Length: 339
Image (cartoon, rainbow, N blue to C red; front, side, top):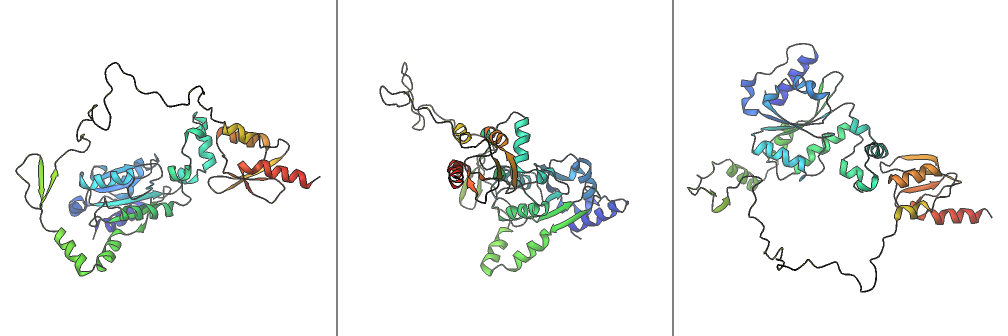
């Protein structure tokens, strides 16, 4: 029996009210397990209980929503180091039911940041992409597993599993069995690829006697700790030319006799487009439709940065959706059609 299968059996025992702990000696070769979960505090006691594995035998990585945004993201960096440096043998991406990140829309997120004193202008332009907002816990786990498997940072020998934990019952549901994916991938190897895989299993050549290097075949790799600087930046290097003593840094170039241009206020420009006598509907960054709302609410959204010039907006009672920066023309046409 392999680790994931044993975890599922232990989880079934736990949900039945029986002893659930695994025999750690039996699975020593598969531990520690690297688990990526959400930051939800409800997992603090639930996770070790659900896995049947004590915290001392798994490496617990957490972020809001157990989200992985790309195969080279900072979360994948942590997963890769957990395997390479901390000895993680298998990876489990674990989502959970009733996820608050999943329940939060873009507009709700903006309201929460505004309550913390963070205006829209200070936030990334694409909130959904930056914060990794998602609509389905299940799809979020599947996407995360896909990113891990596609990452060059995680070797092909590391099984990557995906599962969901029901917080109400403590029951685990496996979405991706990493052993099956691993077996399927290996079954499709060409002879050439298989020979490379076999070669990878050969013991590494002995380390060089040189204290600063490791010999790997014919390649010399500097044996440097993660985080060490390669070399201090010299102030007189071509990257940063030295400034002669007594001289000052050059001032920003501007045309003689002309003051620097004052940038236009885009918020004020957008607010001038709003007809105070009308109601409006918008499509938020989450793709949902909001409204109708009075002009005062739309003005507040503009002022708070919750909508921008490219937000789709419609004057209530009409059929045409336009971008917010086109609203003035749309209202002018509407007024002209009613004369």
